Length: 102
Length: 188
Image (cartoon, rainbow over all chains, first blue to last red; front, side, top):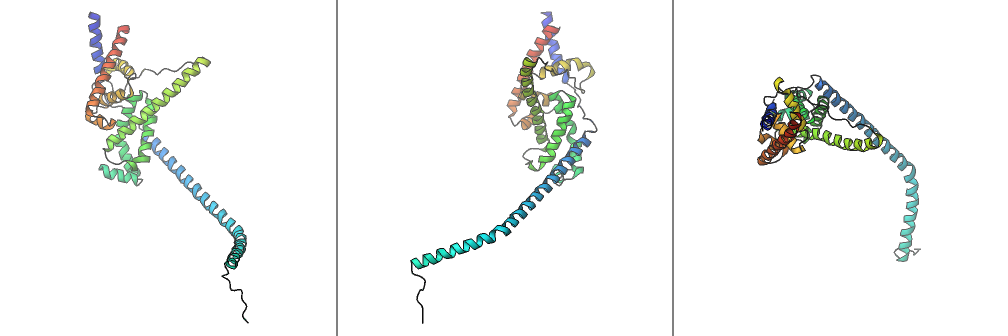
């Protein structure tokens, strides 16, 4: 019985052991570490943005070059195909004047 | 400096303003994390993570709560993220130890540096018992007893009602009593 009472009293004292607890302070150099990590992250971000911009510029240049090289040929063939289609369509519906005027 | 102005300046990448915010909150953040993690090295690492997170996402802070509440919320989340990841690793280590006969590391006893000298031993026993509480009970109890926050402040941080905080702390105390009774029965 006496032991149980002692235990109960010890439990109360233990639960109250945090009364008046002081605040723990962080390492004084912690801010320097944080500032360095922020700078590193920002530098990394700038590097990534530069690489991204460079990649976009190179891709645009490749697309332009490809367009310059391939589109004229395509345009020619497309032009002839389209002309042929218009002519055949027109002749089918007789919308072209086929009479010669003397 | 006013809170709004401070946030505006940090958003404008003002290093001095961020330093001011750090000076204002660093001990609150570190002390809370130390109470939850009970390890000074981990507490320093997570304090760094908290301030990096604050720097990254302060522009998303909507000011529907105070800056202090938001910072405590980030702090508690970051601390428990580490605990959860450690638990996952520990589970994996237990499985691994079955096959490889490796020993799983047990946490060392923690004595909070702010505890009065005459309470150090009892504080050590109490922190060990706090570690066995559920996540929510541990958060509420630590914020109240270690950080000295009111029930209202805790309810805002945890986004729960005042009565829920009371209930969490009451159940935490009951669980601690049970655990301590078992401990002292064996060690008295």
